[in-house]
Image (cartoon, rainbow, N blue to C red; front, side, top):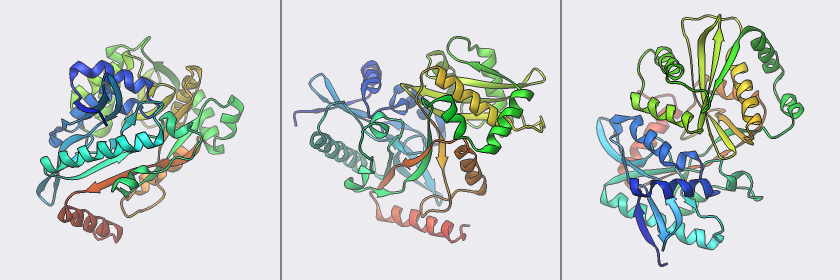
Length: 363
């Protein structure tokens, strides 16, 4: 292949983001806006982007996002290729490539990652395949975890996606009976305000930020990450749903949107305010109505965790949240993930930790 590797830098941000808009393999998590957020999310990881694009002449064939990050286990520091401590978005391709061509490029991309891993003493690399990408939802063929073809262990879970292009009647029919009851109660009890690029202001956003800190009992992440999120709203990549009770904001939820998909980002409510009517139901439903009115087709409401897996250990709260999200209907689909180890000792440490958790014997 007559191709070259070009590292992501500020000079190529525009072409990178244009590629993300055009590629059926890319979503918001691939853009430099989200990359900047992840770079600032957890300072203890000392994240350094080693993301790159594969080019043939002036044509971008593929983009790949990896961060070199420090992870501490058993009082030791290990380096991984991760993404704010989480899974890196899977590589995204130029539209129109044949399957054999994509496979050829993938082999090249993963060989480059392997080489960088050896150079930086990386112990593990993790990727996930984003289900809001067009090639996942609308390719016409069932998706699968192609990472397994390239030396990755499968550690997939599931997520819930609602097709909000359905009729209002179909959407309402798919909602759990108890959720309908709480949505109706919420309409009578609360006022909902939605803030997007047309009406967001710093004071409103700071109300959300301060409530986020209050709900957590502390500042959980650097303030610059909130500045970045505010800019997402201003550039029409996110919106904020605020819930008022007695003319005071007591809860906010932030939703990300990109192309024809949306993702439930974060939420915060005032721990000092005790109310009898649930707040999350009406917030979610108003967000769905807004998304539908703004021509968004798919809404990923969130992970579905049903019980312990060898690599995933949801708490009772996690499982309850999954049950709550399923109450809005939609389909439970695979969230394909994979991890590849470069060091047997590190693999042994991780496996032993997981076995201990599985047997409820973790220290």
